[in-house]
Amino acid sequence: MTGPGRVAVGQFLLEANTFTPLRSELDIFAAAGLLEGPGLVREGLPDDELAAAWDGLVARGFTPVPTVRAWAGAGPPLTAAAFEQIMSAIVEPMEPTLAGVLLSLHGASAAEGVDDPEGVILEEVRRRIGGGVPMAVTLDCHAGLTARMLENVDIITGYRTVPHVDLARTGAQAAQLLCDAIDGLIRPVVRHAAIPMLAPADRQNNDLEPFRSLMGGCTVAEQHPGVLATAFFPSHPWRDVPELGWSTCCTTDGDPELAAETASSLAVAVWAAREEMIGGRRPPLDKALTEALDGTAPFVVADAGDSPSGGSPGDSTELLRTADRMKDRAIWLTVRDPEAAEAAAAAGVGATVNVSLGRGGAGEYNQTTRLEAEVLAIPEGSFAYTGSLAMGKTGDLGVAVLLAAGKMRVVVHSQTVMVIDPAPYVAAGLDPAQAEVLQAKSHVSYREGFAPITTRSVVANTGGPTAADLGLLEYRRRPVPMFPFESDVRF
Image (cartoon, rainbow, N blue to C red):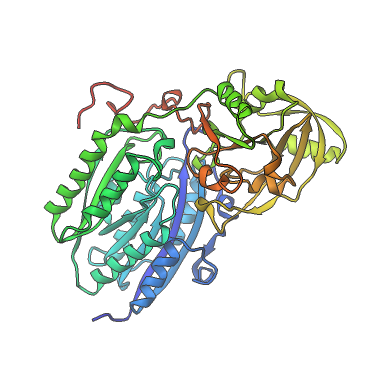
């Protein structure tokens, strides 16, 4: 019988990029709302996995005990102090009288001196609640499973869609299984299979094969008696950590052998598709821009190397440098540069300014570039995302200016925002339908986000912290050997 009980709930989602030198403070969570303790309530939560899990617990008669909600999407690793605050908010309410614990985590975070923040948190939670209290976690499908994570949880569920549109399903599944475990209806056990590979993010799309079928294999596997949940984790590739790599996992009802066999079977299918997963077309930026200008407008050029939804700061000047000789074309782009934004804003609307954009050296993705332009507007800059990755969440350009150089438009802003849909351009006062070329900063999610404007696009092979060409990144700590970097990889 379902009985009353207290279940601790919380959320910590940060997809960390270790290839940027920047660090994130607690304010990275501010835009989506950093809610702690009594301030975390069901009302007002977006329709994500935490909200669905909360509803599932209440429907079964359990009382959610809120810890913290800290959602930031992607960004640089947290400072040590910021991580300690998040961890404390989660673990302090944990004690053995809880009926269970349900945490919504990303699974690919990082902090100063900590490669595996989720594992550290889960280990401390387990220490506080003891071995008899069941714990479930939901993970982004770009999570990287670690030994610490696996040793301390009883149930794992994960997204099965890119772009992510099944957050509620993921949370509801975790809540149902946790309630069943608390009520003694199941005895969950988790096993996983590590796959020594990485692949570019732009092929991770449910509209494409073989990714769609690999994710679909999880649904098929769950039809087997005794299998409670399965997940495939094509891990976020922009972290240089010792446990980097793809994986699969399976939660079963008291059957570790079945869990291991199921995870292994899913992993074998992933490994067989490895060559297809690194395929795809990613032209260099100059060719991508030529293709865009020759096509029907508007056309989206996705700047893969500078994707804030993958943890990049948004400060690339590569498209600006390429487009600088084409100012007679309506090419619209964004550059994060706080100093330039403040200087141009101080000059005022109508002023002609000569600003430096980007702070990188020669040859770097954010190479310093001079631009002479007119200040068209100084927008307020806050907006609501329309793409599914951040539906219901807000962004803020910070100090922002709209610059015009011929027909080219450059939105210069002080705060990092995702460019997965047209919202940043609209916030700057532009009508995206009037552009010939729109810059997106994304690998996959931009397709759905820009679809109301255009379905014509290309992913450009640009440099930066989120490069699609993983060979452009300087990994120092990843496992060796690993596909596709080495040829002698066995699985």
